[in-house]
Length: 639
Image (tube, rainbow, N blue to C red; front, side, top):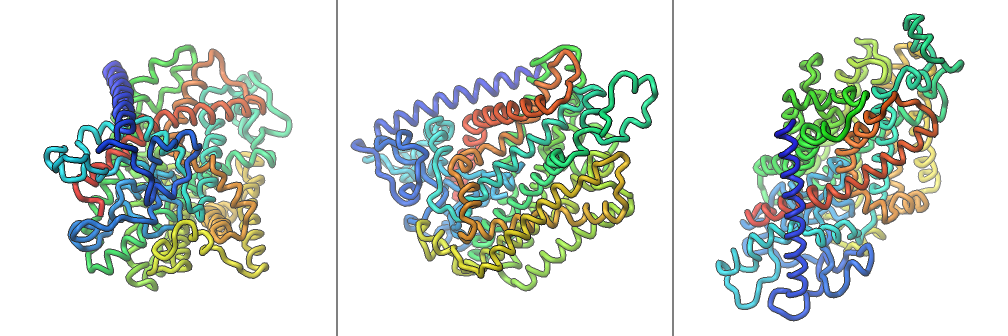
């Protein structure tokens, strides 16, 4: 831990130094633009960016470019891909990233659009990994400078300057505050943010149980959980006469937080497919094989996710042991011990969920246990082109493949649950967690429903003639508006509300006692169908919002602060367990559960996770995305 601790210190110092140097270079460049004179005025994508505040985008500084680029510069000689052909990789924009706008032909590289997946708790998936102000690979050339003399090909700034500007706090802060011009899919920002808050809401209790005593469990768990405890132990605490909070209606929101992860998987399927369809369509029209771009597609995704995962691992192994002490501190070290024992590589390869199935008794897969989500999301992302390609080239076969995969995932849930006799909650059985809850074949339903909805919306908006090629962002949203019959609108709204409320609060019987009074049929049905019904409800809500037929709901979910916070959700998901461990296990006595403790802990964890996420985004996540975009541009791999 000592060596890892020093490595963390060196990394933190390096990031701060690079941020300071990049900021200085960026400020100097703004004060002395290439060629002298006034800075260039915004054009193209930049002209369509709505700044968070006018003061941060004064005329003396160019507006941060957005991921939406309706007014594109002419492609370079030889075509957008440098060779005149099309590619699976979205082309020609170094800014990149998965955008929530309705521009299906937006230019970016697949490595930059991969975040169209989220914690999505995705970006990855469900987290927004837009690179809406990455340093351009082709900034204006300095007057009087040649290609080699100016640091590279004609029109490129010196590589060293471009690298430092990737870390500029000014640039990255401006990027955080930039808003999209087209808000057609803006409701996804709200879904992402509220889901992240819901994850922290549920984890507030889950991550405190190890630091709580038996009274903590008694105040929370259903009646019957203590029946097998010896009388001497029962005498050390008091049991609520009607059981713990999980046996009440309001506290069903705690186990229902499992659906927040399904929301991120649904977002991942929707946005990944939304980004892939125009890229595959372009490759197919040019007669290029989509798999030729697959290695870069996969590598770019790994490079996009792994920097923050690496920071987390180094923090857990090197920094966290030195942050606390006391009688409870050693109780919270299981995940750190697993990482130090060698489990870190499972996280960097995104296979910890599969390792847990192969070796459930091993402690290695428990290293950063919450990253099981990223493992699934990575696996779904790698499989996404297998569905996107036939949806473009042979739509009937593509839809049949999606339906078959969805049926197979539903059947896998039902069969595994029936054979093993699982209750419908990972809180009751550890083997349910390893065999069902974290495995891709049982968690694929929301991702597949999201992919199907993306294909449906793509077809609805023009399919082979992408919406963004026929409309500017200013008119895209109005084009997406529909006027369906009132019975359909109200039917979709009522159906979505009924399904999602039933799934959230219908578990009252499941948690009314331990063992659960639910029978095998109830458990199997809920396990197999709940993660199917939830994304179907989300799709109905998204359709009404995209088409402008649910203005109140869409207005709330599309509120501009949620678009800003949405960019931080990936980092918040990564870091929030560190905050919880540091606080919960620094106490000198076991935590005593109460409603007041729950409310205070949730709000403080949400605030601290958001603050740390902001720092991580500015210093690590966004610079890493900028570097990736810059590298792809310099290597000619943007298309």
